[in-house]
Length: 490
Ligand code: ZN
Image (tube, rainbow, N blue to C red):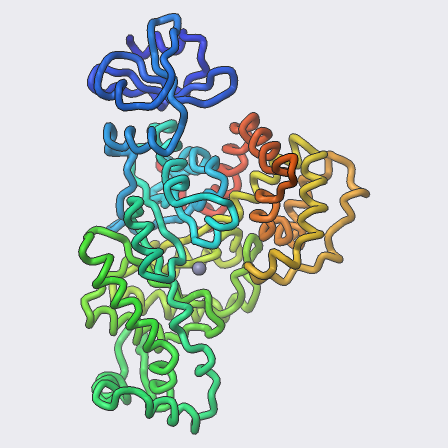
């Protein structure tokens, strides 16, 4: 069977997916609207896939569901369908796909830029809220990569993992990046203690270790590009109290799970915490990790201002510039990327992120891709969109247990007053964006005895309008890349 013949099979073939493996031709196509992997030819490849034998005009074929198992088989045939680490890649972007439908749209964008995409990226919180497993998330990315014939490398991030068991689970599934969330080991309660109490807490540390650390830092200053990071005695004690446990946790996880596997991108996140990370705290954490031989690919501090989900940066941009620049210089000393979380829609600060890092950073986005899906629903199925909006507003309180936002529902136009044609505009209104953003899990999981309230309809509309969704992502994430200062390859 030659490639040209495939397009005469009466199927809707994804042209970039057509591949040969040991005499079997494989490709993704829609058959009566449903996407499958087709295999034509006789080989182990053919036999290994689960599927149903069918007769196409050109001969026998196997029609295989896009299952996790078949994704695993495909990974054995084509190395490019396996995630890899992004060590040495200067600009990397996390493009979490909570629906398992967005990655092909992301690929169609990033293939034109010098950017490494981390296509699979989910936290445990997101898995729980969407009812998915790490295998599901990875397989969805594998299918997108195969569909689009994307051979330039992509990553898979077990995001915001907190325990050894969670890290092990993601690694066992084949994830190539681990973002260790140390927030539970950061003693925020000690950050604002009066000086006298700092002394009392500090006295609890093992004296020999405390002494050694003081010798390393107190009264010292360390050069960074165009400046230095200096440690005063009182300031240093406070840093130790707050971050000591986080450093120990990171070292343990690295030694036990990351190092033995090699070639894993290890990111340390201290962003989901109340304390803004000072340059001193950042320097201390980085240096202690370096002393312990921990090789990190990126580190996510908590910057000043607010990085809320799905809306622009909130805060003083001038203060952010100074804060961010210093963190970028600390990261430069240690040779890793500064990582920016909740990076969706931060258009005001994107130019700074691009410039102040000298084009060396990791940016994570996720929820904005869900919002673009909701925008497609608003355009294509106004009735479903109206039901979803009402539900989101009714259940906002519940969703706020998982996400911190400062929306004011009074600002959201009454949906009953809006004609269908204006519904998509709600996706441009910050309060509505936030409300729809954080209720994704509740919307997708809501069900009665009769079945899911929104989920099946939602996925059907999106599937039928796949090209519209890809185009929306291309446009919206494209605006992110442009604001970061990236230009498409000539
Ligand atoms: Zn984060």
